[in-house]
Image (cartoon, rainbow, N blue to C red; front, side, top):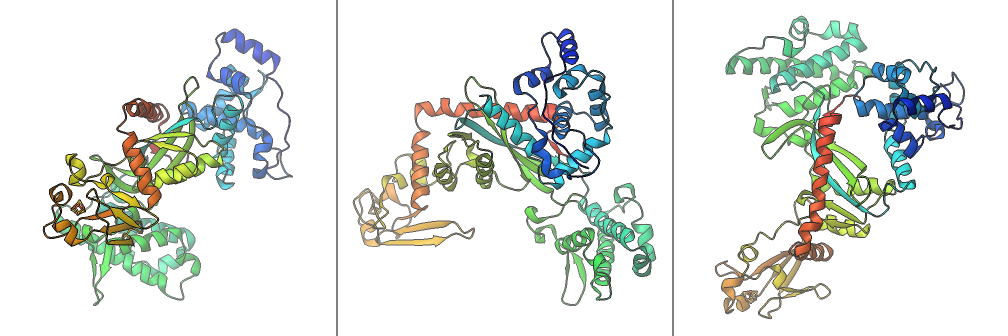
Length: 506
Ligand code: SF4
């Protein structure tokens, strides 16, 4: 399919006249066309179309229809019908009143082109660009970020059902790829055991019977995998995605003894939730819990502008596995904002995003990350009368620390934690601490001197600065502006089904 870019003209006269008469105050789409123009141009999508072939429907219109369709939650058929029948849609799309529109199938074709061409973010980026040009979005302004859970578009299955359904999915894929091979290698009982979806079958009742069923499914899967590992098995069957999922799931759910006996793993023996496959049909979903709520799916991080006197616009959408922590996502969010030329001067986020390294990396991008910093949990800081880390003077150049009693540290060791974070351990002299009159305010360790653990210089100083700032009276008013993002998330969930990630990737 080819595309020949054409200049976008004004809204046809008849369409504009009828639209104005029917909607004197305008509608969302009439106002959108008036305020933002056509938003997209055909050239924006030129990489996605051939130079020759049947001419495509103007991609700028399909992009607008896609936005309008998702804003109203319309199916492709309903959106195509709206293009044909609704005056405000014709106005936004610059169509004549007599225009018959297009077949609904072009919308899914257009989305497929966007996804295959890696241009799915183009729709948001161009919209933001136009908003920026027209002054609705301030460069280096204030933005706020928060996350919410997103359910995978799948039926939640028990562990038993997941295992058997994964075997079924692999058998179906093998049948489609090479039915003769499957007929030759499959156990005849498998056709009966895995013919119907597992959740539609009557699974055995009782703990022992279910355990036996899980063992049977495990043995079936192990046997199938052994047959696939045979050097004579066609390579195409070995590399099927469903076979790879079966292999991974069996490694996660079963273990083989040195004698060759297969047994189901105890839940405690399974890998972390971040690696556990939850469905053979949507392999990226993960099981997660947060504040007593559990879900299988993803997490989405929304960032929106919140400058006074300007509309609040979503500037970045970042989707991760449900198990990914918020604190690890801030850099990726800021990279996305930098790519769109939308880095803020101030970014408001809750405590889940604030840590020393994020404060430092934000500072490097000239962003003031504003959010509550984790508190010093040492008893000295909690009581408010002991010597916490802020009471010690640190000479980073000389790698020496002086305590409130004026004693110098005797050791400065730089180490890495199990997770690879750099830390610095400080030791004071046992003799100094043993004879110290302030010892009760400094350490409770019997017969041991005071020790400190510091983060690297930039992170330490950033945390200290943030802790001091959050004690100030004006901090609460500054941070209170973050709360508005929860309204945006709520609107996304209630009005735009944000909580379900559709299998199409929408
Ligand atoms: S206990 Fe040791 S480190 Fe603490 S104030 Fe006394 S001398 Fe300094």
